[in-house]
Length: 533
Image (cartoon, rainbow, N blue to C red):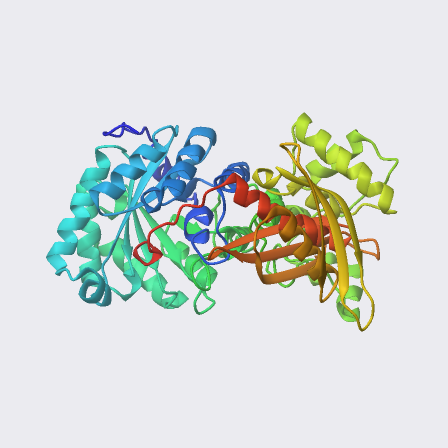
């Protein structure tokens, strides 16, 4: 690692060239990933970043490089491999943080340094212990130091909504004069309302010096359930960048959901005339499902836009209306968010071409090597099932974490249970180094027994923290997903797997955790309280 970061090139000015373009700033891999239950490995972040690039996000906030060596490596890997969006890293207004971001995003074709500093009275007194003038001086110094390495600098006033408007305008004016190209107005604690935030943005744009030279950005949290509504209100008052996440993940109750924002702007074009984004909405469903698979966190059935019930109708009255005209109860087309009605029945006689076409329609454009792998798994599944559904295909296309595959592999599994008695299980595992290990165990049920047997075989002591199973498709032969969270040496680790046999899925889920332990040494990041925004 060099002592002096190189200057990162940027296309500053592109964001203000089209006043009708709403820039989508995705922070799934930073604000989203730092929330409990959503941590990702380096490989998982890279995979998600590639999907976000395909989705068409404008700015991809890849992480907080100074938080840990692992976070730095993840941001650097994304900056090296992902092309399309601007790659951004977060930093406090401190030289060390800023230089870490500069080094991490150095390989990016388009980069941004995103610095933040709290401005509200509560934060100034209890967290920063700074005067108003010290806050302004620190913000200016942070912008100026960032400009040594990157021409595109975003300044965020943490807890902006609870900051005195006059002081906030003074801070933003100083940051713009110092060279900031984007100023962000975060509702850090999800406190505001649509009317209030619209008035605040309108007032700031009228009173901040140099407001016409920069992009105003909105970053809303969902503590009161109004993140999307507040973001839309900010847009109506002149914000032209929105910071959001896939599935609305993030600190506490989360952030504004990207998919909801994008479709609200499109569906209610009458309220937002001429405004548009660069998001390829047909990839929303696949991207949301990928995030769910990677994190092991299911999407609520009633989740707006991409939930299983978003385009499902059970009520007789609704079904009758839909048969007459889809517009009676649907304001969006399922196809517009990537939910396709299957026209091809895929089974054991289907070929590669039909599989490729169906996956493409679902938003998964696989290369030949990946298609070969999925096709093999598809044929195996098709031999077990009468019909392979879209949900089955998505599970195969998303797959398991590649970094969790091996060195342990399950070669034999047998489990039995008896009413009123304990269950038993035996497993045989093969290791890439040639070892073969067999173990058996007794448990409260077949899954408990399998987990105990696998734990003994790999030599790791697991304490199961959470276990969930869910059907991924229809029918008695549906694939089931097992998601397991365990505590190992004081750390929470997650694994998941899919199979038509839920006991097998559970065994492979715990094996995924065992493989992850062997693959990675998790680096403990510093306290997150300093980086929550």
